[in-house]
Image (tube, rainbow, N blue to C red; front, side):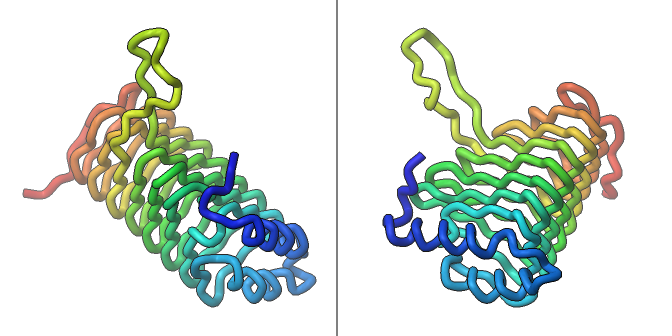
Length: 220
C-alpha cells in the first residue's frame, strides 16, 4: 500500500528510526530514547508516553499521542493514507497486539483513560470515536466498514461510509464486534461475544447476536 501522506524521505526517516529504536528494551533506556526520537516523526507526541519495545507505527506524521499513554508490545498504529488522522488522548492504555488502522480520509479518536485490551482490532474506512473511561475487552473488533455486492460488477472497495461512535464510560466484554453505522450510548455494557449491529441507548445492558437491550439503567 502506498504511503500517500508521506514523501519518500519522510517514510524512509520513519522506517529507519522505528527500526533502530523500536526494539530497544525499556531496561536499556528504550523508553527514554523512543520518547525523544519519535518527536521528530509524529504529528505530536507528549511527554511521559510509555511505548514498549516492538510497537509499530505507519504514517506517524498523522498520529497524535497525548501524555501518560501506554502502548504495549506488538501494538500497530497505522495512519498511512491521505488525510488520515489518529488521536489518542491522555491516559489511554493500548495492551498487547492492539491494531488501530485509519483507512483513507478517516479519523480515529480514543478518549481519556480508555483501556483497550489485548488483540483488539479498530479499523475505519469512516470515522471512529471512542469516548473516555471506556473498556474494550480482549479479542474485540470495531469495524467502520462494510461493502455492497448488488451484482457481479460491484467493486469490493465500494464501501458504505457511516462511522462508529462509542460514548463515554462504556464496557465491551471479550470478543464483542461493533459494525459500521452504530452508536453505543454512554454507560452501556455489552456482554462478551455479542455483535452490535444497531444503536444501543445510553445506560443499557445488551447481549446477543445481534445485540439486544436486556436491561436499561437509564434514570428519568
